[in-house]
Length: 143
Image (cartoon, rainbow, N blue to C red; front, side):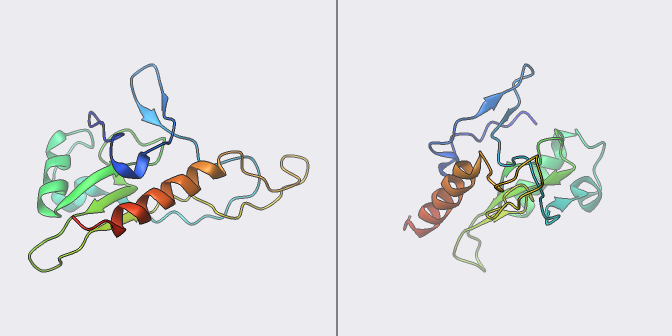
């Protein structure tokens, strides 16, 4: 996706990694046992009847028809197949905003797993906390 939203307030103070192709991301998942609790919005191209998955018309349809800002995807998905982080903007019917975060890597209590991670510590837990605090503060602001 060619949309850089790293300046959105939910990412404030979070250091982004940048791959050779310019793809920006930040780590949230560490070694050890993780629950399978992804709740991403998938098959976005199918919903809008637009393909293939890298067609920019999908992004346009998603953001315009849903009054949303597409803020992130699961790290391995680099097209418009799924949305993992979205800001739903105010509409005539609903006056508020919402931040949708459905990426399963946001695990607040990572479990221990033998020698791989005996203490259940996630070295990226600070990113999860920062993102969550940023989202709450952003939604709490009156615009």
